[in-house]
Image 1: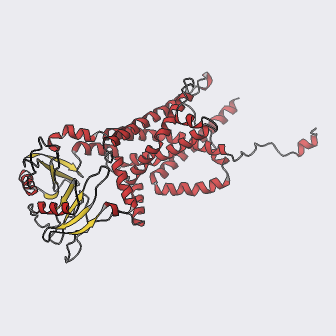
Image 2: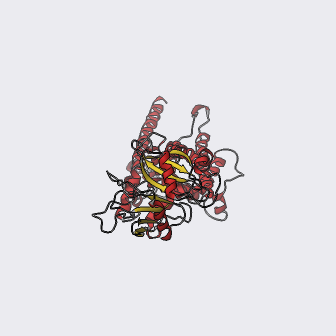
Image 3: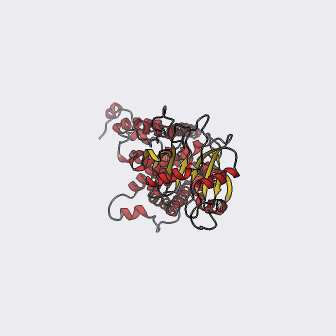
Length: 480
């Protein structure tokens, strides 16, 4: 029995401190997943749609540029490469010879010229290797046709230049957070016991129509796509603007860049630089030595004798102290990316860089880029990327549908969309979780700067929403 004295001496009533249990982690994850999903999903939709369009570029190239890329008939042995280069030069007298990619099978030979005023773009002349006939000229970018270049720019920066690159970096910076957070939330929701795996990998088809069924499709599909989406996020970040710079700095610190091919001839006054950005070419000199196209045949023969089979690009020397460079450009599995420097005067290989000898991180980075572009495994790679894009679009649509289905429908509480998960979950985290989580978040924000900036934006938005909600609650209480 409680006496009056007991009541007076008892401390003032206050809400008990929230317990630090595992549910606090789920609450925090849910709130992050909610806000990131609502605010980042538009970026993901654009990335998925533009990426889906890019997956069909090999087929588009064949349809639009088939006359330039393919030969009408494979008839007998190919004409000398020097003769093909001479035909290209006669058709395109302007510019400096940059690279030559001999045609193989049913493909044309590509003779590429650097032209002042084009920047990173080049003019590529396509020659039938069996007849020596010029099939046409296109403006290319790193070997890509105009339509592929246009779709690539659309996917990377929406044709907005440097500013546009922010959208794709934000999408990649948050995609892995959404995927991992969603997997954890779905895993915890299924509990334990018999049938947990089955409940994880397929939606509850017996659920009534509504948020529960939509959540099942959203989560189960996301689980099936998780590995592929994580791969796209990681590889996309490697060539993003800010995170990509940090990734490159990490490769430098670990000495894991792809090694450059030295093109300095033995006994030359000094090194003239390594391979350049256009197909492994040497750095252009201010006054390049005229190139004798007749040497292309002997250079190719020496490279073939050194084991460089399949598609290759031949780059002329930048000056008299430099060697020719020959680079394998087979990006399909198993890739062939070996490179040699050739001195036609002595018919010898002066330097070599084999893909197998690259640092592991450099190999993985190169393979990841090719897979992200749909080149590594051919049509299978394209189909997988298209499936990931379509699946991601479905997951986003189901996420927004859940937001709408969770809206209040009572007459006195109508709202167009559902409310955010309850605030304050972080306050119920154990001390060790906060002590460990804060520096981890800061480290991730430093490595992925646009993730850090947008996370701060989400926190600011959350504070504003919380203050506005509290103000409305106080105003409602004052009127009752």
